[in-house]
Image 1: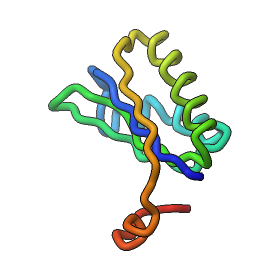
Image 2: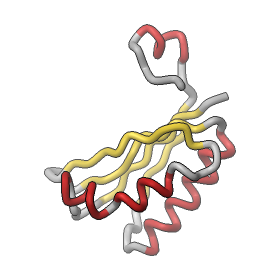
Image 3: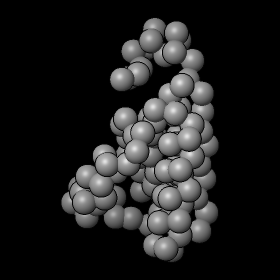
Image 4: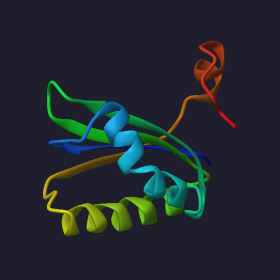
Length: 101
């Protein structure tokens, strides 16, 4: 069953276009992660937060990605990575046009 992974962490930038330019290689590599269907990148320059919402094929691939990504962020100096794996209520999500594929 598909799972949603929400990740956020304290982040001092870059944000916006500068972030998009700096992290294009990382974004491209994420497409190669097992079980990953899509990602929405999240950022808040005001609150100094970075993160993302991910859609994975199943809980095992979401959990494996969370563990790998947390370790990668820690190597970059990010110590407090918050990640939660959610079930998706597909009937309600469909009503609200949520991307399920």
